[in-house]
Image (cartoon, rainbow, N blue to C red; front, side):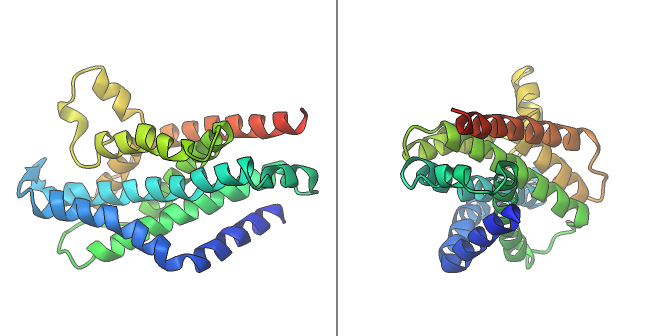
Length: 243
């Protein structure tokens, strides 16, 4: 019941700010598509650059959508509205509260990715997005929801959320196999970047879009991040309850 309550809160927020959320989900990816996709007339791995770019943009949209849906709102609710304290004294199991936040954030990210898929659908490509692609994007959204939840618990003020975006989300947006392949990066640095969740998401979605299998390693990486950050956020909230 607690999960449904949190999801209902996210749904009410989504309906209230539908146009703002939709426009925010569109602006940056569209700019990237226009600047990189239309402005750079080149190929990648023997294919038109747009074939490489679109899966990366869609993956990035699920990351930014999920992270943005949780990070700042949760920081404000915890620090100023004291909503987290109210949850702790309520009969709602804390694990259900965490699960609801993660699912709500991932659904917001999936919506952002769906908007980009819809906008790019008129572009004539041979890319294919299947149910497995949607599952990967949803899982990616869950990972970044847990990251946002963990960071919001660590935030000291509401201004920390934009700093997290600038220090974590923005670098990943450009480095993690979204706009350019990581194949040309220096050894060592390339391996580290390839282990980040967005790198694996972009790679798997791109392989499926080109008619290949996603592979198992990417799922293992995403599930690892999901487990680690879920554990950290759970430990934090239960520790705070017992203070």
